[in-house]
Length: 185
Picture 1 (cartoon, rainbow, N blue to C red):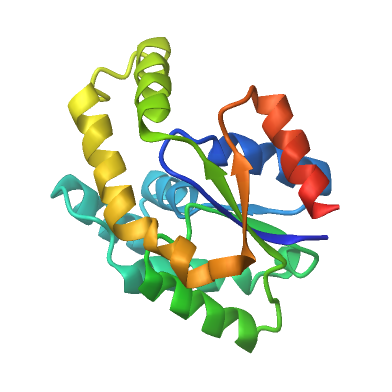
Picture 2 (picture 1 turned 90 degrees about the vertical axis):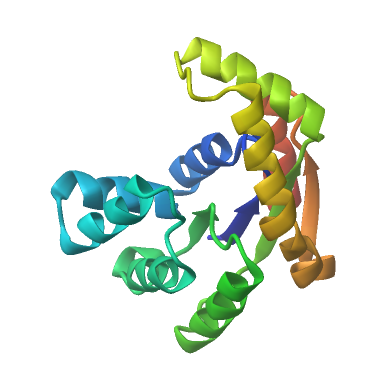
């Protein structure tokens, strides 16, 4: 089964595609945000630490995110494959991931980038905010998220270089899923 790093800007469909593919391939979808939300709900030490960062408007530091991903990738269910969604987000995280994957002998098979132009993403995220009643997802907030993505995460495309497979993320979800599966098979 594949080990895939799924990349793309906010609203590109990473979470949805990750869920679909993980279910079809019977491998875990590993997303730091999902792990953090579960830990916060359980009020674990990690959850309390993460909540303190988010409550103060700060990003969870790389070392905490890396620690969480390392613990998750060392669990037995990852031996047959995995999909990383939302990690790595920075070059420092990618370097740490490369070291970890080498150490646990689980090299990634593919880096898939869902490519969607910013203006298309803004319209998609505004529509999603209306559908889901997310009043905090204003055009300004969305633009800030895309700006942060372009500054911090887009450089990963250069880091991974020719290992990145670009997939057009604009078509309807089933078409994007098929394009990813076609590339991976």
